[in-house]
Structure formats: structure tokens, C-alpha cells
Image (cartoon, rainbow, N blue to C red; front, side, top):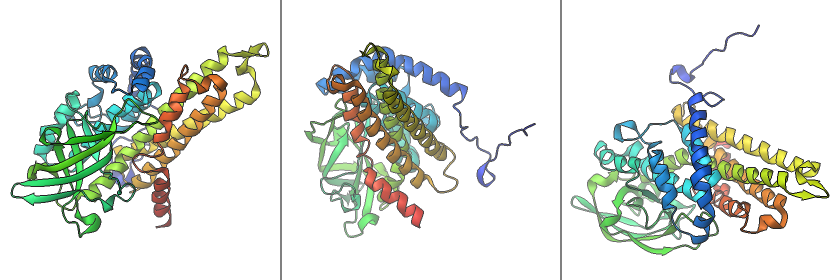
Length: 397
């Protein structure tokens, strides 16, 4: 007779640990959200992509289900959900519409620095509006010549009494022109390298200008653009942490957000597999459904295995965040989750197009959109090449 399982907490901690299987509450949430996505969000996805317009109707449906509040603290109007539950949300939304998923992801990303390192006053000022869906946020780190090498940024923040004056531009900013709040990283000491970077919450109304919106391959319903700051005055109280903390805050924020990019990638891949399976059961060649051809059966089996492996790695990374990173391996595991899931999404969506043949190459079917959407998951929040650098450094340390 097998012994009863014993729950072990790392380093003597007693906080609950995410089980390998989803809890009943998580499964119920997943079922309810999938119904919303199938009924309302998925039917709009093709038009959102074609028109390259922000998915306001879908975003409002998410607000009605209180999804913007999911990852924010209860004390400031959020639900305080665990990160695995947040990954479930992102995956289900991305399965239907990657742009809608990104509209939820980006505000959370913009507010992670405020939640983790912001003052109580800063949290009280901004988190409730984002939790309610009344406000949206962006994360402004990259510049034209400071992408993977973010420490080489040129945007400046100069102290002037009880304000900072910000000047510079940020590129590849998700939700540019939609967001009310911009978490901006700028040099307060240009001679100090990465130790000279500081972080600020900047309200759009203070003078944030959108200089350009990109015409993108994928996630076309989520605007990406260049923002310009010209003598924008930001109160000292809107600085996140201390002067010089910005680079550490930026990197730690990405550690916490990369697993949910992995969840987005898993959702895109799952949507492509589901579409391919449905097509294979209906499409007939040589007098029978193509689902009966063993060569294609092997393809979908491999696709499903890769997706399940990616999902498990994403949930492992999310559970590490919830446990407080007890073994100090979040940087490595988060990079693994994002990198592996993104590569899986690209491979699965490409195979889905192949399974649909000529139809997969047309916009009459969703898999070509999913293939285009998948590509960005290998690029943003650190390219997959950078993720491999991060992983290898931790392995060789």
C-alpha cells in the first residue's frame, strides 16, 4: 500500500505550493473563460487583425469578467490571484486572440514595478484604476539603439526641485497611444552605466507623445509605437524605488513577466492545434478524412506533446513566483519557460498551416494569423537568443 503523500515546503516555509494538477477552482475558471473566448473574443479576432485596431469590445468583455484585476493585490482593488491562474487566463485569451491577451498582459507588466518596488502612495494612486480596467499601462524600456542592451539607453531624467524632467524616446512600446500610464526607465546618472538607471510612472497627460505606430506582422490589434518625452515633468513621488534602482527593477520585472509571455505562446499554439484538429476531421481526401492518415496523426501528436511540455514549464515558473523564488532560480526558469514556449508556438503554428495545406495559407482560416502572432513571442521581453544567454550564464555560474 502506497504511503500518504507528505506536503513539503522549501526552507521550512509553510505557504501553499501549486500542485501538479490544476485545482478545482482553476479548472472552473478555465471553463468559464473558454466559454467567453469562444462566444465573444474568437469571433472578433480576424477583424481585429485585419483592421489593426485595438480590440475594445473584447477588452470590455474582459473588464466585465474582472480580468484586469486578476494579478493585482486585493488591497488595491485586485483579485490577488496566483500566477498559475493568471497564466490560465493569458493562455485562454491567446488561444482565441493574441492581441486581446496582450491588452491584459501589458498593463500587468507596466504595474509590476509599482507593485513590487513602488511606494504605498504610488500603489494607491495607480493600481485601483488599472485593476478596474479604467486605466491601462505600458512598459517603456527599449530604445532604438538600446534593445537587448538596455543599459545603453539615452533617455534622461534630470532632477529639478521636487520633479524630474524627462527627455528622450522609447521604441517598441506596446499599447502606445492607448495607455494612460507609462512606466519609463531613464538615466539619472549617465556615467554610471546600468547603475545610473531609474524608473518612473509617467501619466500620458503630462506630455507623452506618440511619434509613430508600427505596421506589424502579427498581434496587429495591439498598437506598438515610439513615444517621445520632451521636457516632461514628473513628480519625485512618481519615482519607483531609489535613484539607480531602475536596471535591477527592470530585469526583476522581466523575470516575473516572462512566464506569462510563455503562457501567451502556449495559448497561440493550442489555438492552432485545435483549429488543425477540427479541419482534419472535416477535410476529406482519397475518400476519407485526412485525420485517418498516420503521417498527419504523428504530426498532431508531436504538436500536442510540445504544447503540454511548454505548459508544464510555464506553470512551473509561475509556481516559483508564487512560492517567492525559494531557491533563487526564477531568472533561469522564467527564461526557459518563455524561450521554450515561444519556440513551440512558432513550430506548432507552422505545422498547423502545413496541415491545412493551401487553405492554411489563406486568411479564410485562423492558423496563418496564429503563425504571424507566434513570431513576436520569440522576440519581445528579450529575444530567445537572449534567453539562452541568461540560461547558460546561470548554468555555468
